[in-house]
Length: 193
Image (cartoon, rainbow, N blue to C red):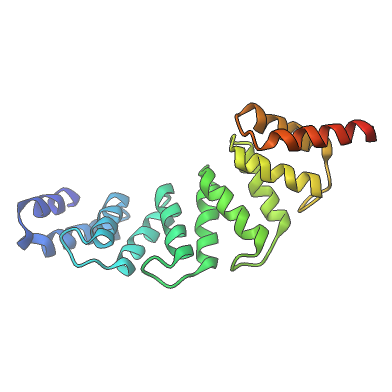
């Protein structure tokens, strides 16, 4: 049925309603491809009148059905109010979903929201966990933020040796902003130990 929808789209603009009917049938059966197709049509105004609210419905459906890119896009739309009202609680929910599926951008965005209390309840501990998740996936920025938490004891116990390890990893990975901080912390730690 999904293929029939594509055929209707390719034939002429007079078959758009038929194409949408076909896509909706398979959306009801859980077709992520159809959800994304309808999202794209309504988000961009491709063959239909642009309607970001409808687009969001289809994208959030695809996200709820496990599509990682849809999780991140739904989060961004919710966070920015892109065609829908700003809803940072929903944004965090979608960021967490994508983070737990390995999306590094989502890990960092969830951590930042939680760290700042940006439209959600502030939680240094949860922010710390998302920064660590992203740092363990070789995100230099997350390594830097994770180290700051370790160094300051934000969301965790203060852990200078662990901080030095991650500063060094960030530095070795090309994140030059870590160099002075690594050297400073290393020198201070040498005098303490």
